[in-house]
Image (tube, rainbow, N blue to C red):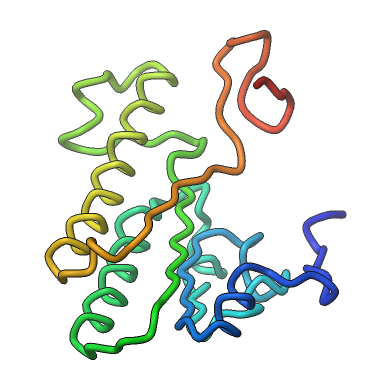
Length: 172
């Protein structure tokens, strides 16, 4: 049962490497598999997994807005403190993810009856809130000295290459 796995203490996560190099490290996560339950707080000075437990089920909820809000608060605090130390902020978004939900004002341009259309609306919704974080970097004067990296643990398949959903197929 991989849902109870804990990160091996033999591993040195990126946050721990950066912390030992003098970085302030922070994480805001939205899914139970990226939490203290699994040991993924290792190396983070600030670790907020409150949105992952238990009141909100990300599969029934929307994570992008609150994850961005918390990330923006971190950026505002860093800018206000005029702290010369470098920092690492990991924002873990669960959206877009099935069950795909409509988002008023965005989803309508893609459609709201087809699953692929709802997926496109979720992408637009998440993009909007990631954009807010990028805007906050600019507004706080932090963008010029910041590297932004986007990664994903999987994609979605809608019949492409014979696959449906995620976790069942791998395609380059």
